[in-house]
Image (cartoon, rainbow, N blue to C red; front, side, top):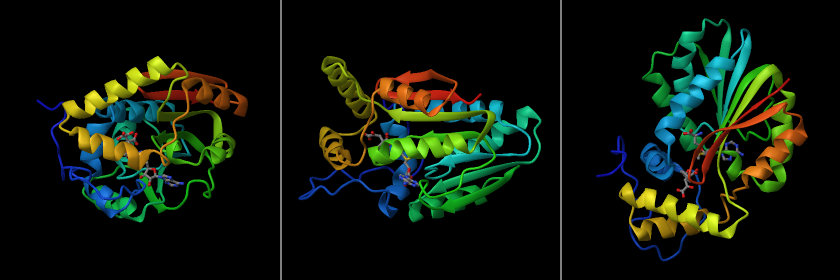
Length: 252
Ligand SMILES: C[S@@+](CC[C@H](N)C(=O)[O-])C[C@H]1O[C@@H](n2cnc3c(N)ncnc32)[C@H](O)[C@@H]1O
Ligand SMILES: O=C(O)C(=O)C[C@]1(C(=O)O)C=C[C@@H](O)C=C1
C-alpha cells in the first residue's frame, strides 16, 4: 500500500529504460507530474508543507514580505496564505519566485483556483538576481541544493541582508553525511521510501543518475556553519526524515 496516493498526474518519467539519461531539469514534463513526484520522493513532504507554512506565519510581521524561493507549483505559498489567517497581521505580501517558466505557469493556474486572502506575486526569475527586501520570512524548500555550490553563500547573504530584525529563514534540503556508513544507510532508506511509494528500481536508478550533477547536497554541519558565518543569530534543526532536513534560522 503506497504511503501517498497520487493526487494528480502520476510520475512515470523514468519508468521506461532510457537510451540516454539527460540531466534533470524542471521542464514542462516535470511540472506536469511534480505534485506526485515530490510527494512520493521526499520523505515527510506532506508534513513539511503545513508546518513550514505555520512557521512562516508565526514569524511574519505587519507591513512585510514573505518570500517562497524556488516555489515550483506554489504549494508552500498557498499554504502560508491559509496559515496567516490565525495570526492577525496586516499588509503582508507573498512573493513566490521560480526560474522554470513551466512551473510558474502551472503555479498561477493553481493559485487562480484558490481564494487567496493576501496579495501574492508570482515571478519567473533567477533567485540569484532578484532583490530581497522587507522580508519577515523566507522559505527555501529544496531549492538551495539545485544552486551551484559556489553561489550558495552569496545567495544566503543577500537573503540575510534583505531580512528585517526578528525575521526567519526556513531552509529544507536533502543532505549528505560525512560518515560513509550513515550516508549509505540514508540513501538506502530514501530509496526504500520511494519503492514503498510505487517507484521501481529502474525509476529510482535512472532518476538518481539524472540528478547526480544537478542536485548537490551539503552536510548538516556545512549548512549550520555557513548560516552562522553569514550572521544568523540561531540555527535550529526542527525536522528530519532520513536524508531530508529542515532548518529554522533567525536574525537578531
Ligand atoms: C525541488 S523544487 C522546490 C519545491 C517547492 N519549493 C515545493 O515546496 O513544492 C526546486 C525548484 O527550484 C527552482 N529553481 C532552481 N534553481 C533556481 C534558480 N536559480 N532560481 C529560481 N528557481 C530555481 C526549480 O525550477 C524548482 O521548481
Ligand atoms: O527524487 C529524489 O531523489 C530527490 O532527491 C527528491 C527531489 C528533491 O529533493 O528536490 C528531487 C527532484 C524533484 O524535484 C523532487 C524531489
